[in-house]
Length: 121
Image (spheres, rainbow, N blue to C red):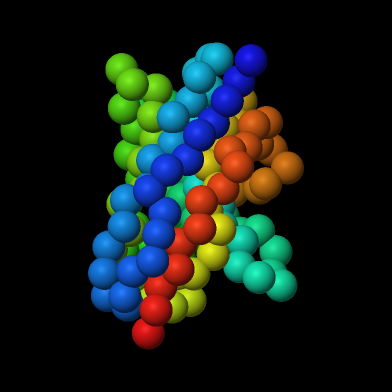
């Protein structure tokens, strides 16, 4: 049974940093990604990484501030978020895909339960 478990969310002031982690169990995937969903908005792509070569992809809104990484030995993927802004406030979801570095939510096979990130101004 595949499980994705996120951790690391919380409340931080604007300009601060948070690190999210996602532990995957059950199998490995071609890519893993992070998405976020703010109240009243659609879920949007944040970042993704390929499992084999660690090729990364970022949404323009987070490029240069966020960094995605993966640990093969621990089967985890992390999202380091720096210079956080109030508009980064959302529930962040970890997801796993059989495809290579995808931005489309429907191409992800498994999802975590989400972790809340709140950035105060």
